Length: 127
Figure 1 (cartoon, rainbow, N blue to C red):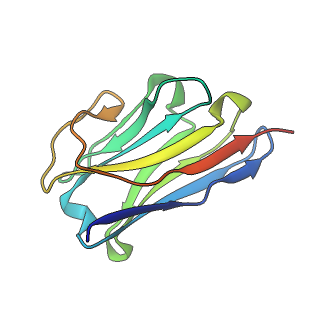
Figure 2 (figure 1 turned 90 degrees about the vertical axis):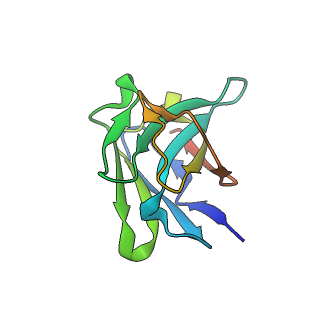
Figure 3 (figure 1 turned 60 degrees about the horizontal axis):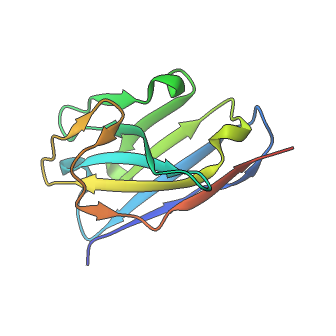
């Protein structure tokens, strides 16, 4: 069974950092394009970042560039989202998604074709 499992969310103060993880089971992540989305309370789901399968090109939502970094660790079959200088407006449930194998819809700030979703991990930025 193919699964994506997110972890690393939690409560953090403004200006703090979190690293989200997206671990895959049942398939090899490096053959897949991976995207992070988020959904804040009362808002629609929006694209955060994505990384293509090969080569690993990355894309980000414009306002998040410089604060968020997406990366792969193929040995751990995991994709990460490093989030720095977090602000209350970053509060949301963060979802990992995958397209593939050999997905190529990573453009702008998101995957445009999603084959698999994780269950989401909540991030709350508050003092």
